[in-house]
Length: 358
Image (cartoon, rainbow, N blue to C red; front, side, top):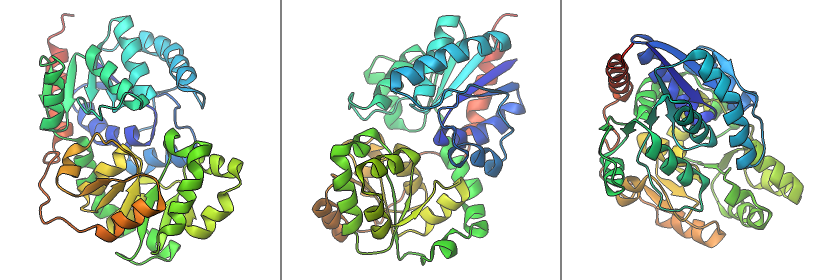
């Protein structure tokens, strides 16, 4: 029995780490890296830190528009899958790698499993929303991180092959959170103290367009406490083109992109996290860190309902007001499972694959 995982960016490398180990005990597991994130800071460091074996195949997709990236992945993935002849292809999350892996699998006749199925922001302006909706429609097995995700699929008429398994990111947080806190020297290196700084990440196209960058820098300048800003290559390039990088560097503690352990150590110890990332919103919740999401929609609606997460527009006044009003909620239920999602998914995949006729 053979299963291929298609991954391409930081969140997917992290999600694949516990699942790759669980799958390797049950099936022949092959890892394909699409090259969507190709810088070492966004790619190889995660394989090293999380103990993932190097990819069995790598497609050099690189940067480009959404259409260019997805098209390049389709062309690159087809011969890889045809050479491997998997019984199932697993795709993760909501990126161009997710959609490309699902599309080429569907058109080539391979079964599809979608890890992190059923999430919805209900904002079709987001490429990620389109990716996740289309992937869910053509998947055979849909592994949901929460009951909300199950309900979203049911509302769209999808009930077959839907499984509430929990979130693999809980598995990762449980295993690597304590390791990050013990091993990382990021706080000392950056000169910040536990609970006395904020952490910010910004990378989405909506927030890195020229028209949005002035507001971003004004937000950085408005935060009164020390502000640690791991700078995504896209964001750095956009700020440089706009002539705003020096202002950003004066307003925040700028770092290159961070590995999982350093980033997690900084997140765990931050007073608050500001982000436009879907994954970081959830990671903040898992580590009990209040979050301000610099968007007008979120796929992690449970964190907002409980008060751990708040949608805030990218403006100094809105962010300052939200920071001043922020409180730590009394309740922190295990919204996304018990840390055994990888085992459940691996068991279900192995059982499903075993029913396929030779």
